[in-house]
Image (tube, rainbow, N blue to C red):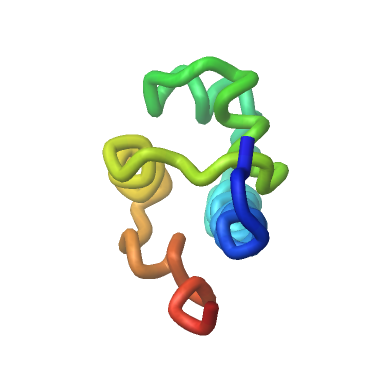
Length: 82
C-alpha cells in the first residue's frame, strides 16, 4: 500500500485514469477480471490499482497502456501536478 501522502495522491490519479481507460472506447465492456488476465496480473492487483490503493510498477503501467491502447501519458495525466 501507499507510504506517503503524495504516493496516495499519485495512486488515486493513476487508478482513476486506469478505470477511465477500461470503461471508455470499447464496444464490449471489459471486466476487471479480463483486464487483469490480459495484462498478466492478478484480479486483486488490478483492483488495487483501479481503486488507487497502490502505485503500479512501470512494467504493469506499460501492460495496461498496451492492453487499453492508450499512451502511458494518458494513465499518468494529472500526476505532474503533484
